[in-house]
Amino acid sequence: MANRVQALKRVRETERRTAFNRFARTRLRNQIRALRRALAAKDHGDLKTLMSSTFSQIDKAARKGQIKAGSAARYKSRLHKRVKVALGDTAK
Image (tube, rainbow, N blue to C red; front, side, top):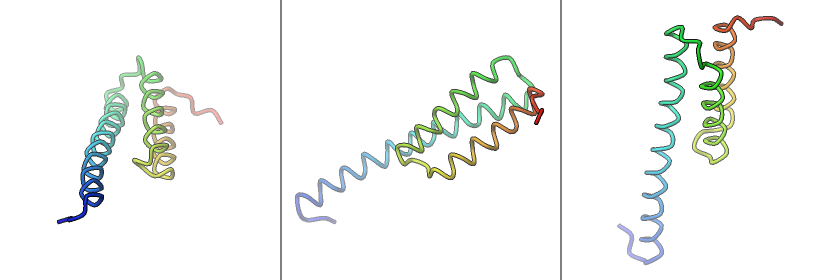
């Protein structure tokens, strides 16, 4: 256990940041899961708006350091590939 005032403050800050980052990553995973479910359900009604909001959330998480930039790029690439196939936009 920390003894110094500054060390105690750092413990409090770390707990606060950890809780917020966990919440943000969970929200991101739920958003990605919603897009994947829409793709699996063949529900192509608002697929583009769902994709843009998901990409926005992925970018925000990468910018804030909650996920790495490479992970964000990988998520976006794979999701976009699946959306293109679902919408029939497979032209080269």
